[in-house]
Image 1: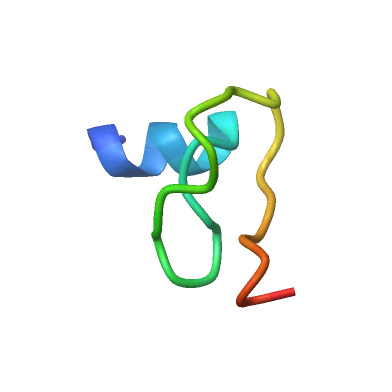
Image 2: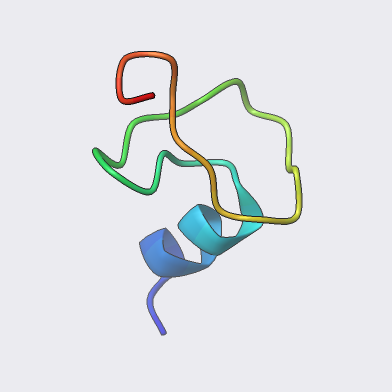
Length: 36
């Protein structure tokens, strides 16, 4: 797995667009406000 994929799984990057959400790790994939 690549670094970007790991960041998406950890919840740092949006799972839809790949943008940074808020810098906090949630521990699960999530979407940014624009993609919700």
